[in-house]
Length: 158
Image (cartoon, rainbow, N blue to C red):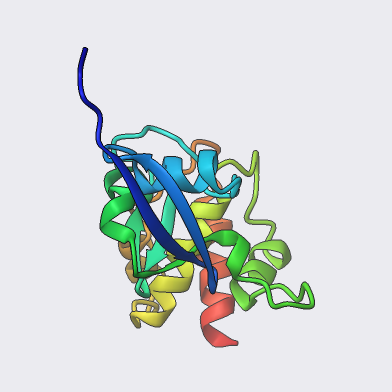
């Protein structure tokens, strides 16, 4: 019989604290989806290659599949569910994705949007080429890249 260490930790997600008990090996992605029911963050490759699981950790974008939940304890986590305001008003990046029709199947959209928010905050929107470079960690299997770049450009201008 193998011993599995259970951890009791508090995750601060979208401004709210959540106390959970989980195995020490659980990723932030699985904690968000399976323990907290926040399914907006998608599980794509589960190897950090597609960006579908992008969230913000202390204001920086990370692939949630590569971060242990324990490493995120006590830090500020923002998911796609935390972007819209309390009244349901979309974040400017979310609105730009709607305006520019930057969705196809929509699976990658939460990660794309979270990366776009960070890309704008980091100041990497001086050109379409720069936007493409700094968004390159997020794969869109439907190839909506021109619309995604247009959405980032629009939101950066707002």
